[in-house]
Image (cartoon, rainbow, N blue to C red; front, side, top):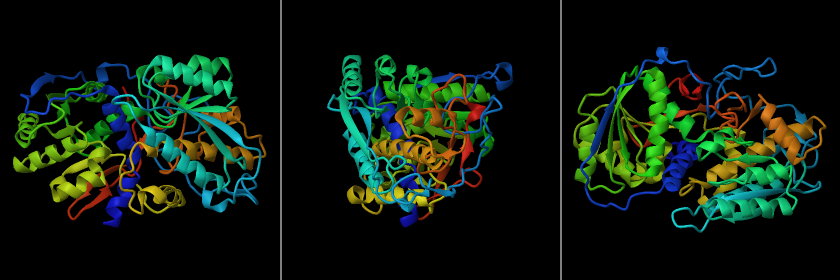
Length: 468
């Protein structure tokens, strides 16, 4: 069972992306069985439309200048030359364990996160980021500078986000990090000369904002589903199952855009957030009624359990793709081998590396050796530790480590691996989504006996060619 949990712990980032879509979009309160709504839409062939530039999680650059190298579809090497960047005596700039405590001048970062609002309360983004700060300051800080974070809680409204931007710029932060902030005060940060880095884009304006995002949100996650459907299953037709709420509908829009780009046809079936067993079976039956090549579930949490059990109860053997939420320990430990045939975006990849050892050390004091209960906070850890790698590279080169220097280097780099999956951070690859820095995913699948393994050949797959 150790592999089962360890592998899925590294998928927490994608699970968090799915959770954000559901949480920030709102949800229905319908707890009864609903008649599924069905809509069937043909898709134009990919050859009929001029493809737009890519947009999301990690990949090789599409149209780039000579200054941008092609990182390909393989992870960046984690071994790097030692230097005197952080802590006492330096270390491997991508291996935090090689650094001693940070002893330089502290760097003050700001972080805006949404907390305390009904349906929009994500304190773990703050608390888990603070876990990473504690670890990081014992392992080099930001290029030798201890990290101090000034937190500000927004309440899911433009006014509160703007107030946080004003508060943090007034405190003289060198760089602003976005936890889960629906309405970031980009103009306020920009006017104060404070660069902005986010964990993931949530709403459409984020994708073109004057900011950089460590992950690509729904745009990349949903596109990765299409990559697997086409390249692994040679699919032409897709059945989609999702709840009918704003969050799931937003995810579905991103999925459909990628299906359209790839020339696949789809049938969409919508149900309530909370269905009975009979209700989930009805949804599965309807989505599979035309014998699609692949099924996609956009349900989360209890919906994962209900759809997994419904598929088995009906004897459906069509393979199914979902987000990493359905591959979480909380789901798999309930359904067991009912998850055979399910595939999970951003779950898999290597499980033994210095990055993953550091990730485990960060979360263990709160979440234990198996990472049980880890969710949205993984985004905060990924964001801070990825930025620390940028800072360490600057220090290793003898450059000054400042918030602006970190932002500028992240925006131009092609050789810094994100944390903890070690895939290349390459910002600006997409003209359509210029703020996104990451375009690659591992993809996993459940195997009999309780483990989730990487789909062969999909340990790190680029979504660039499939982005709408």
